[in-house]
Image (cartoon, rainbow, N blue to C red; front, top):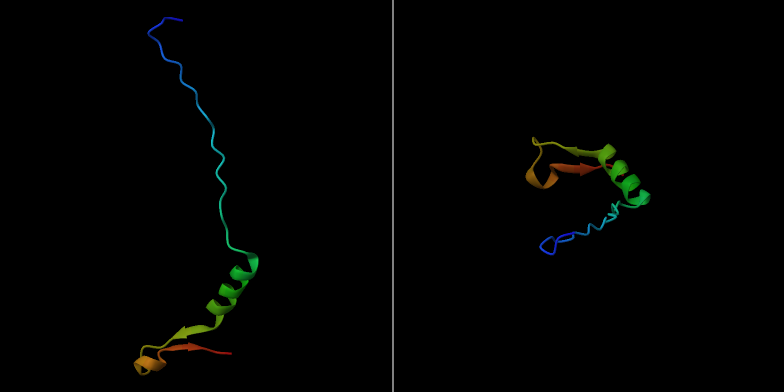
Length: 51
């Protein structure tokens, strides 16, 4: 190896993907099934979630 050369070292980085808890996903799915928006109703009542 020549004295003018430079050695490079590469480090592999392990990335972890953060995901929501399954309970959060289940809650959002339940909410999405019952959420309805009706633009014909007054502004305060446009959003409706049936319990």
